Image (tube, rainbow, N blue to C red; front, side, top):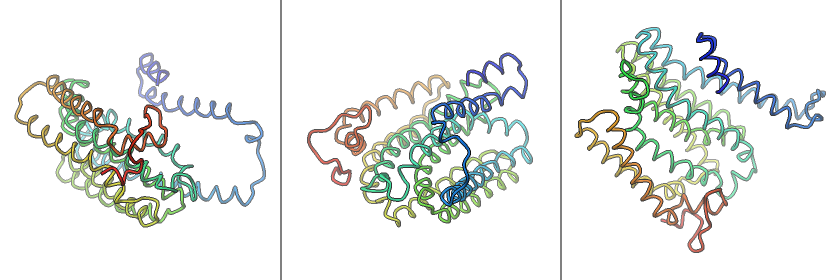
Length: 337
C-alpha cells in the first residue's frame, strides 16, 4: 500500500494504480519463499498425490474465477448502459466499504481452510458452528449499525459531487459483510471437496446478480445492481448454510441460540436508528457523530454483558486472544440461552 501510494503521488498516472497490487504479490511471494525450507521449493517429479492436489486446486481456482466474473456484472452494466458518473460512484462506494471486507474474507479463507478439511479440527465438535457464531456477532453490528454510518462517512470522505456513492454506501457495506459471513460456509464445503454444492450456490447468486444488472440497464439506476449483489450473497449463504447442516458440520439450532442475544439487541438498535435518523435533519458530520454515539452505547452494553454471551464463552473456551476464561457456566452455546 505504501509503495502504491508513493507511485500515485509521484507519477499521477493510471498505471500507478496497479503498483500496490503488483508490489503486494511480489512481497508476499518473497516472504513465503524465505519462510519455506529450500527442500520444499526444489522441483520434483509429480506424484499421484500432487496430481490430486492439482485437480483440487483447479476446481478451487475455477470457482473463484466464476465468482469474481459474476461480481463484475454490475460494474459492466453501469459502464455500458448507465454512464461513467454512476460507475464511478459504484466503484468509490465498493472500494471504500466492500473491498476492505474482501481482504478479511481472503484472510478467513486462508486461515480456516486447513481447519475445515475432512476430519480436521474445525469440523469436529461443532468447530464450524463456533466459528460462525464468532463471525456473526461483529457482522451483525457492522451491518445493523454501520449501515447508517456508511452514507455520511462516504460523503465526508469524497466531498461534493459524490452523492450517489453516499446513497448506496450502506448497501455496499452490507455486500461486504455478507461476503464475510458467506466465506467460511463456502470454505467448509470446498475443503471437503463438495464443489457441486458451491457451484449450485454460484449459479443461484449469478442469476440474482444478472437480474440486478439487467434491471440497472433498464432503469438507468445504480441501486438494482447493488441490491442484486446483496440478495446474491444472501442466496449463496443460505445454500451453504443448509448444505453444511446436512453434512453435520454445522448445527443450525446451536448457531441460532448462539446469536439470538445479538440479534435481539441489534434489531432494537437498528430499528431505533432507522426511525431517529430519518426524523432528524442534520449534516453528514452530525449524522456520523450521532450514529457513533449510539454505536458506542451499544458496544458498552455488549461489553457489560459479555461474560453471559455465547460470543465470550466460545472465545474463552478456545483461549482466543482478548478473552478471559469464565469460571462458572457452560462453554457450549447451546446451554447459555
